[in-house]
Image (cartoon, rainbow, N blue to C red):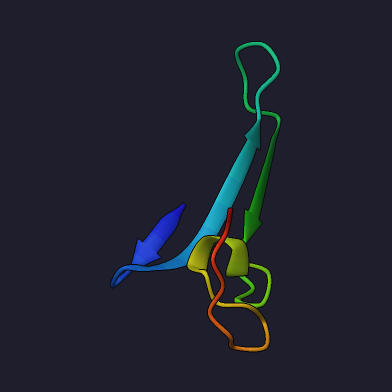
Length: 49
């Protein structure tokens, strides 16, 4: 997870079977980052449980 001025701007996931990273997934789309930012795509603040 990367943050800029306290706001999550990127979330990355890694596939590492064995001793090598074989895939990297990164999300930068603000509409898809709402689970990490707490702000839904519609702009309403949400609380994750």
